[in-house]
Image (cartoon, rainbow, N blue to C red; front, side, top):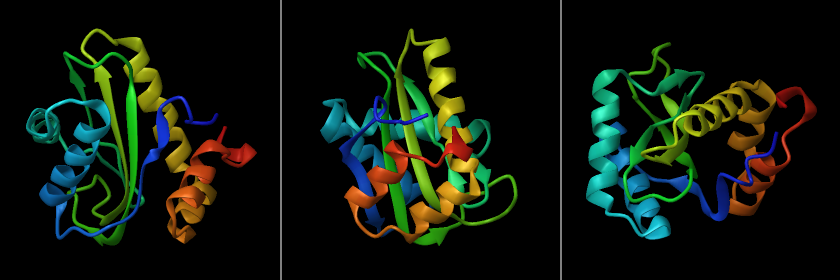
Length: 153
């Protein structure tokens, strides 16, 4: 299942340089703010609040930070491949190098959960994760997200 309805080509960061989890969340919040017209501070605070409940590092080097914003009109996704893995306090203890940010309108309910499940299913696929790690530019990364192998659907 393609993620083209969640993430646009300009919402793909091919080599984000960060030194840790907090900086990674700040950088993706800043980029998301530019693309959504929302406050980067608000996005960052929502992500930090969610991380306090438990790490969004789901394992195998993947994190899916997410939250809900009152002023958002539709579900928004942003993908970042980190320049080098960082500790994200992931469930399996592995450092994270693939991050998919998911923001949803406050009243999104099931749509938010469906989007989260789609992203998790896609990024859990070893073939998809390998292709994302091997891709070096935004277009190649977007192509993997837009046209995953049949095994990930």
